[in-house]
Length: 281
Image (tube, rainbow, N blue to C red):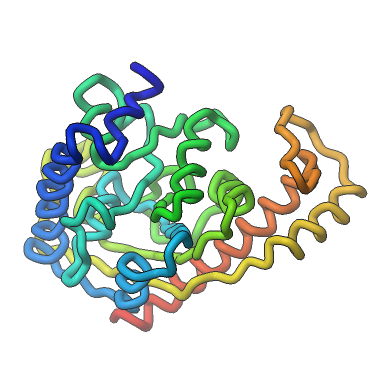
């Protein structure tokens, strides 16, 4: 399907009109569900809005969140005051290939919606991760769900997949990394509304809570050197990852570095999850 229809994801495809139509429709849907049909409470919304609207030119934004339902994106961006109808400001997002890209029409729709297909289990160096990296290198906003799959349990943040960390390391400019934790969307779109089936439409009269953190600081040069030092004493099963130039990061060093970054993000997200219980009662 032509590298999963990358041409449909281009800003100038048909003058950008199909993309604008998709974001008007999907953004309106998100506003209706999140702000009208349900009750939403947002902590620190101004930080996200400021970074989406007016961060320094050329500086990428990488938001990360837990994954409570198949409708987290776009409903996360449907709260009052957020520019969810603006296709130019909208996020790029990593989306599951087996759900969002099953046929021609779905692929075209999600491509217009700035979604990048990711094959679960195919590793951090799969083909379309380079497309996500290109978004960051262009100074764009990218959203990821680093837990890797939906979980509707009220439980601690799970161990994060390393794909997000690899993007942070490989980006030409270290992105602003903003953690987000939310709850309530698992009630809007429960996985087992029917026996093992979701409802056909989002449910109403639920409470959605979104806790937005502060940007995380990553001293990548220092973390890189630490990873290289630690990795010299480690033995691991190699998967044939490429060496990251010009820093000479072999696979063992990459594993140490990605693990350290992922743990920092996971800790920040878990802190938000616990703080959220008192922020938004």
